[in-house]
Image (spheres, rainbow, N blue to C red):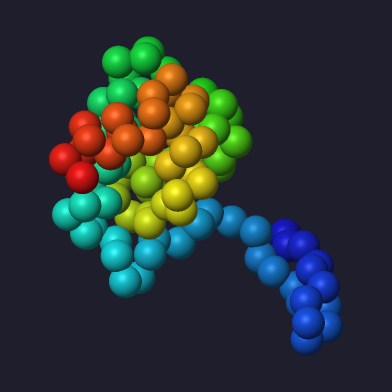
Length: 98
């Protein structure tokens, strides 16, 4: 299954599927720390990974990858996740030791 998208170089076919881990940063100690902080806050809030992802408007598999330190989330995604956890982004980052 896939989608068609129109870019500057014409129409392209893109496959839909799970987000791939960041090849450059997967397993980075800061990303692993952030993921552990997100997982801890999620569990404290009694949210499933799926519920947190839905609240943050992110894909569940992407959220799982963030929690495992496989993805390098953008600032906007950190803000979405923090809001879904009723935290300030600075509180989430501080809990990760960042």
